[in-house]
Length: 338
Image (cartoon, rainbow, N blue to C red):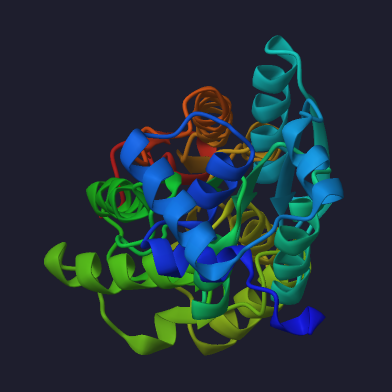
C-alpha cells in the first residue's frame, strides 16, 4: 500500500543518523563514508525508494535563503535581516523573508521548505517549545537558530548573553544611585522574556536593589502599545527611581508615559532599554540601551548557514555575542541620585 512506503525519517531512525544526513546521501552530497554506509544499508533493509521528482528538486540549488522572525516590523529583526541579506548577496544568494508570528506559522514554514524553495533557513523564534525542537531535528536542509536553544539540539546557533546585558543595565542604574528599579518585561513564556526576568530577579538582590514585586510588570508582547499598558500598571502602583525595559520599544513607551504624567526623564525616573536599536538615538531624551548586536547576530547566522551549505558534515557551531551598554540622556544623572 502507498501509505506503507518507508519515509526518510524512518530511514534516519533505522540508520541512527539525522534526517539531514539521509538527505545528503540520497542526493549524492558530501557525507562521511561511515554515514553513507549506514544510510545505504538502511535504505536497502527498509526498501526505501526516493521520489524521483522530489529528488531532482533537492539536487538543484535555488540560490535562495529564507529568514523567518515573529515580527518583520520590529527594528531588531530589521537590523538582523539587513545583515543576513548583505552576507547572502555577497555570496550569490537571494533572501526570502517570512513573518511567523504564531508558532504554527514557523512549523508550516519548516515543512514547506522541504520542497526546495530555499537552500537554507535562518530563524529567530521568540518561543522554543518541544514541537519546534522536534521539527528542527527532522528537517533535511540547513537551519541556523538565532536565540537560545536546548543544548542537545544539534543545530548551528547564534545567541547573545542577555543575562550579562541585564547586569550591565542594573549596575549602571545602581551606580547612578537608583535603588527602586522597575522592570517592564515582555511575556515570560518567550525566550527573551524568561531569560531577562530570571536575570533581573537574580541580579537585583545581589546589587542591593529593592525587590518589591510591585516593581515588576509583564507586557502581553514586546510592542509600544503593550509596553504603554504595562508601564501604566507599574506607575499606578508606584513611582520607581528607574525603569528597565526588556527591549527598546517597552522602554520608549515607558518614557512617553512618564512625560505625560509630569515626570521628568531622567531627573525623576531614569530609563534604560535593551537592543540599542536606531530608535534609541531619536527619542527625547535619547535612550540608554544595552546593545545586543542584532546586526552582528544576523551576519554571524548568515555566515554559519552559508558555510554549512559548503561543508554539511562539520559539527554544529555555537556563537555567543557579548552585549555592551550605550549610555545616553535617559539615564545620565551626572553625579548620581542621592
